[in-house]
Length: 204
Image (cartoon, rainbow, N blue to C red; front, side):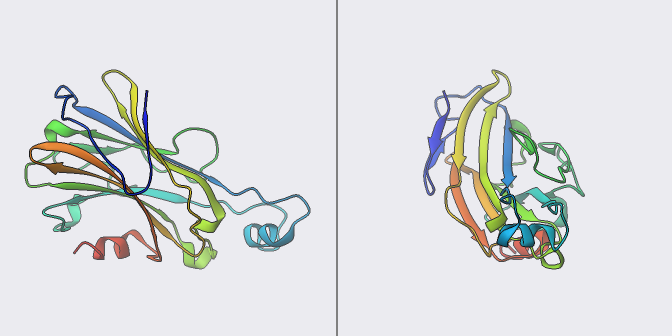
């Protein structure tokens, strides 16, 4: 049974579970549904049209060396779906966030992560958010979850419950090495970074 984390909590992944190798990291979100009859949300989404504008959220992984982002190849996102070492692989872009379950998935092979990589940071940002005038106040039910791929068992889930109106990027969680073991931290911080390149600069 999965352990549900609250913001700021941490959990051991490999300690006591030495056989853990491949982890699927699922990230999900839903657009807030505009009430029928328009109103504020309707005008925000539709921009005067009858249909809601899609909110294109993108999941990315920053591979850090000693908490620093050191090379562009260490960013795994829709434009670079697989790390050079093969340890981190992105499932591809989901343009709408529609439907139940994971919207985007990342597979991490812990045994292949190079020794110099000490932390993996999982980020979701809104594509073209400035031009589209969109922020995470228009998103609900955001989560990150970890699944043991060998057993298909969901190990950890973190549901974001805070409101992130005005925020355009979310740092959902981190997988990191500590004393030779892998751990996961539930972060859940919103930022006003308007692109993944701005998020990367936080770690440079």
